[in-house]
Image (cartoon, rainbow, N blue to C red; front, side, top):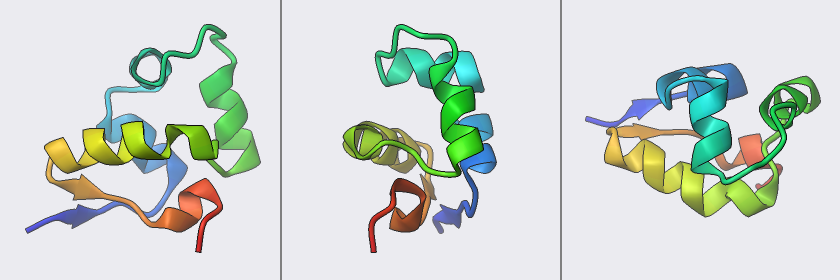
Length: 69
């Protein structure tokens, strides 16, 4: 059974925290992930990377977290 995550905070936590997500998405700036949290949306460019990382852990998250329907 796949566990559904419902928030940006849950996704970041389940993927190992802000530094791990920054590294996973190949961001250089340490402020990238906190900025996504404040905007309440991941950048669309992170969709595939984060969705695949979640799937590998038996997790999923709604597309709305990336601003997609």
